[in-house]
Image (cartoon, rainbow, N blue to C red; front, side, top):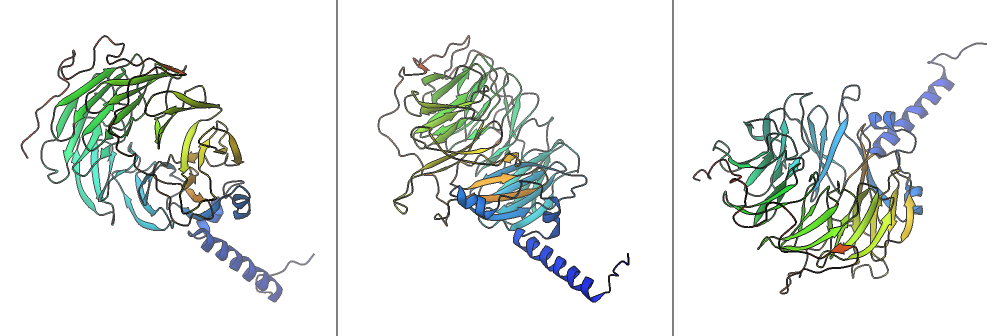
Length: 441
């Protein structure tokens, strides 16, 4: 059987059509033939499938990395910036609404342990090995780098003034962004810090594997309050309207007043809490390790509803006057990796989107966008077709009446003094957790 040569006219036309088709698909993905080459079965959600489930695929993008040596490890969102980190320390920032790349930079040494990126409005920070790197969020240009006094153990946090780095030895180092050469503030804690710190306008708070939660003033080295739980605290804390929410592996979630340190309520989830609590309007969502989800009143600690087989919060679409016919919707992931669309008021199932082949799902507390990714760097953004601009989460309204300690369905009676050998308060029973006084600025 004679074979057709590449230069035959008929074969040339076929090859031309093939290359044109590949080019068009590559352009549609926004990243050329590399994205096409690595799309596996079910990884790219077709627009027809998205629309069938009440969603629109806004964009698809491919992270720039060497797929023979590297994998995507972290995806974080900071307002309109999607921050990407790979196993080999390659950092990439995308426009969260278009998927376009703003910049790409190597952070530290390839292969050294690195953290996820933390960002504020101006800077992005990460650790690599035993060094801290701070880059300009807009351009990716280096701002400064510092050798750390020890080994970092969890993701950093950053506010307008400082970047906070949790260390393996239980200390928290805080570097002044305006004066990076100054000695850092160093806070001491009991136990390893396993999760990124929480930073609010008033406080920086962090927790440890020994079950301690610490709240320090954000503008000076002075501990404000501490709480000891009976289990490890392995997830970040959350905050809303002057209240700090803590999830512990002792099976309880705690609500602590940021002003007084009082425990406003304590809720029993029945099994260890490994996932960070998520604040959405007047609800706190809790995710026990057994694989379920509680919706709890943020003010009173009472159970609103519970749903089994839920693993992760993904996003929330709130009700808005611009879209009077569009009800609110909660997006979560179940243990199999499917995306569930729930009624926020009842927890009832609205729809199910097959996303099992997309293992990296972002927890987005900023707006209604869904961000789904693979370890090979394929990222896609979905949202409701009618909502062309992000529907931002509303900040909690300030209230004159503070939440009161209460007992409720599924929750225990709250106590101003938690059940602990070392009560919370201005003067903790343990040794002063701070290693140094604040250096003069």
